[in-house]
Amino acid sequence: MPRACSSLLAGLFCCLLLASCQAAAPGPKAISLRTPAKATEAGRSVSPLAGAQQLVLVVPESFNDNQATMRRFERAGDGPWQPVGDAVPVTIGKNGMAWGRGLSGEPPADGPVKVEGDGRSPAGVFAFGTAFAYQPETLPHVARMPMHRVTDQTVCVETATSASYNRIVDENTVAVHDWTSPDRMLRPDGLYRYGLMVEHNAPDTKPGAGSCIFFHLWRRPGAPTVGCTAMRESSMLTLLGWIDAAKKPVVVQLPQAELRKLAPVWGAPELVSGDAS
Image: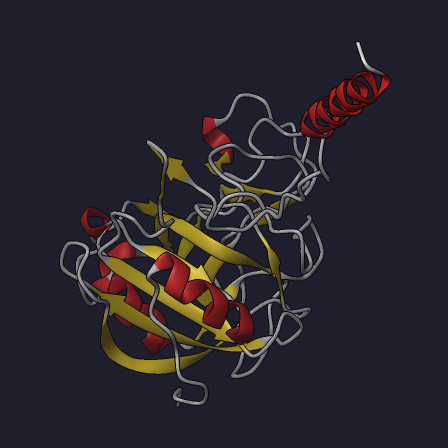
């Protein structure tokens, strides 16, 4: 074979070999960003609000603020959210908010993440659990949520190693009291006279991720909590008279900047700053 042809074939072989190696070589490793909206069903993105016909929106200005605005919304089917009533002021954890564990999935990569005892309210989307009251018969409207009557035996367990962690229980119905830090709910100050449990860190409870998150009465206007959402008694009674388990109510708690980013993704309503009174 002529030398020129031999050189040409050798060059061609080298080019093909190089192309093959480049095709087989792995590219840069993809960076996975966890976002609260990352839930799928049959390959489709699913909003954490799917199926909900009632929504309670709680919005502080930032992750570090402990004053917030609450507003109620309702919709028919998967239609647009319609506001119900007026926006009202509420208080949240004394240290603000941190990403919690709920319907919106695992916490995203940015922002604080809630842990037990951090003094922050959970951010994200959450179902409501049981309502509770010292005397349910004093409610002005019949509750349409499961209702727990609070007695001197009622505690919410905050001990992370307990089998009852993050649950409301009556001590006289539990054989083993394996906790050391129960939140006794029949309080002299009456903060839990009426309230709702938020299904943060439930039902797949993770030890140390936070427990016993409630909507309850505030100590006084503007007084923050240690992780719950608190409000005046009239606002709580209005909420308890409206919320309906059959409509799969959810609570969305997000700072303003996060709400602006996630509302279009989730199909959530947005709250205009400063419209609470």
